[in-house]
Length: 598
Image 1 (cartoon, helix red, strand yellow):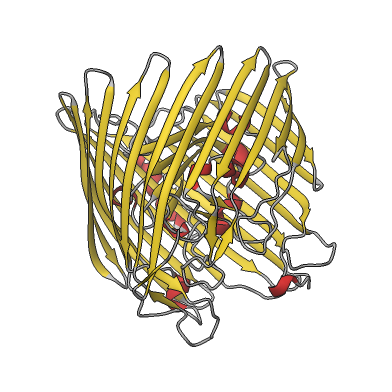
Image 2 (tube, rainbow, N blue to C red):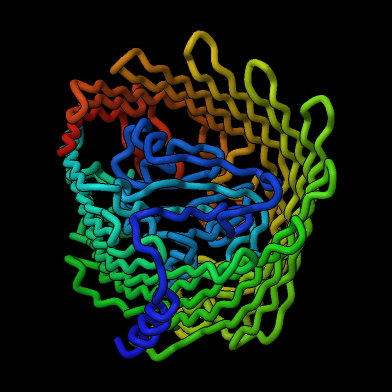
């Protein structure tokens, strides 16, 4: 609390002359500003609250599963992971309202269990940016960024109650209530999802099921220039031990977060935004969660400035981040400053920037990027970008009982070429990319306390092609995308014979949706090619996973302006498939839901 009070005082001074009102401000994620000078250069996917609702998702993990191009791995009873463009899970940076949400208690520093604390009905918008974004956002943005913008209070009063019931005895309850006027807003959300689950591991010969209980509660208040929020989350996931034995293992994770943000427009040239976030988490595990885990704390302060200069925009930002294992008194910190410039010159857009990183363990590092877009007369837009990145090892990889204090940071170079065309019937685009990462951090698959089990091992090289088509035929909105990715790893000079583990080379997705008056339906077909798994934990695939095709159906009907009913069928043809060796996946899931708005 002593650290929070000075921030509150600074925020109050920034807002001394603010005009109050519940007007939300949303950043353009690619440029970390709400008033970009140029159009998008990076490959970006964007989803609003209605898009998310249409998928029939119960949790944020459910929603990510409907976006196959980002590569979600979510086996029942295991830790979830996200792979973008063949990179590792820790190479994707997750942001909530512009601040990192990656889980520092995770061994690799990836989002991991942090995905469970994101309340689905509190999301206003999700933007997914593919490619390096480290200059604007810092570490972990090597292959992509997933940015979440949360809702603020609406003008007036509103409340919504949602319930869903489905197979595997799944139950979802969600409540959101907000009130806003010229003096500000307040918003409250509560989400709870429970399921009996399935028998998580193939080696378990009993009939037991591994249940999941996940709930998140948040309250947020503020106005156009200032807001503060407090969030509590708890997840309980049952899992099986080695060999599939059921001895009552339970992962019990608790998290709380306080966030404060403020923005001030000093004049027509200069705007500034300040963000403060502190996250505390712990996870107990083992039989009945009796093994007490360490406590972790992450504190971030970010100041962003937008400066308009002669039809161009200069973004200057400074940040400080402390990651701590408070149980063992271990700490890593970094101070960073970045400068990013964007400008339109005739038919050419350009952006470029540099970030200086001062890390408590690895000293000073500089990374940079440049992006160029060219508009042709036939409606085609050509894009190109190049960027470098830096990713420091996590607390656990350095300081844990199996950590390695001699680990060095991972570094990467990323290049991308793209073309987009707007047709009378829709839109098409193609992106070609290549990412080369050095000092890849690997785990040797053992657990020998006092002996380093993490080490820098060779490279991770990924390249691929992404195709996208969108059109509207007779009121049917049709989207198709195909992603080809070739990802190879090396281990002490040895190159994997096939694809990096859990990354299918080919992923196709077809989505069709239509509205008939008050009725809306959505059909999604996902096809993934075979892939390899890593059962020896050396980063080199050694076990084959079969490819699969899934069909998901979702629909809703508005009885009136207050009541909506929904029916969702996931994995409609009950496909038997595996994304991780020895772990079962859910079969067909049928859910019936009801939304009521007061």
